[in-house]
Image 1 (cartoon, rainbow, N blue to C red):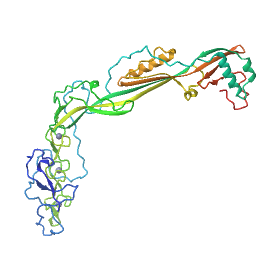
Image 2: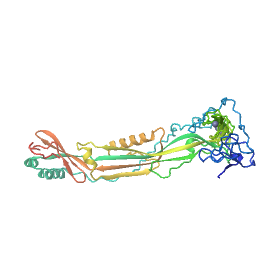
Image 3: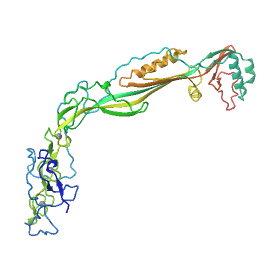
Image 4: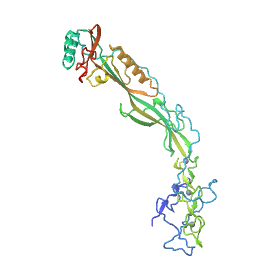
Length: 431
Ligand SMILES: [Zn+2]
Ligand SMILES: [Zn+2]
Ligand SMILES: [Zn+2]
């Protein structure tokens, strides 16, 4: 026979029992097979002591519940083993934490970050681009291009004179910002007397002063920490400081209706064997005490509330192509580019004095955009500028100015306005 034993001070619903109370035996819960302790019931003439043992109270055990609940029902209820413990709502106001007045037990919105001014570096060094093609070179590239196309008018190229070349490099600017957003939540745990700094005298650092460095840069992740000196001790809202709650299976009676005899205590003319004629059974959850340990404070009556900081690290990326040509950006994206400048710092200075103003403007606008994110604090930033050489060649044909473009280090040609460009009967393209 296996007996289930409990220390009296760890019994459900008995948080105030003296620590040295004797060990005693109880009926097992539904999780383990019931072991009947005490004397088999012998009042019934039909009782078979070998096969039908009615349960009786173990020797030395009291029959009364440990706590008398004024709102317990007048009669035993039918036990529902699937009943769920009710949730205990927090109704009391918690002690305010200076600087964290908006932090509640629910995760709040990200906190506003502090504005940091953008610094501007006028000493930026840029990689020189190769010199743009001369008029003669541009003509040579176009001639070579035409000679490889089946249906381009070959005669035209010799009559055609390139009057002008314009240097129109295409730029790709990328800005990446490693950011952190901070949210806070007020959490609690049972207060077991653990050592806590500045207990009930919360004086925490401000939200952005709390140290919570990322584990690695440029990697999306979340990191949590406790805000120092944010602790308060509060009376448990689950049990209002009692340490125990009313048992939700027997509704605070300690007993439930015997299922066998439906509470009558009778089986035909005899007493019910299941309940020994009492009509009820000891509650399997609270084991007759009518109380259960408060699940919120685990019986400790008080809760340690503290603030948890949740940092979300993320990467913000923006990219812009500055293309003033008629060559599609899509056809440029796969080509080899030259790096003009690349910088990584806590915050980058926007590109200021590059020779192409639209690049300066684009960089300034993206750096400003990232710095103006209201809740994303900048941890690290990097930007890179690539250039792709492009020249626009111009010539006059039939008194009209026509253009063609030589682009990329590969010197590819885009000449949509080339005279006699297609016979119209073949699949040849003009690129
Ligand atoms: Zn109970
Ligand atoms: Zn019964
Ligand atoms: Zn409690």
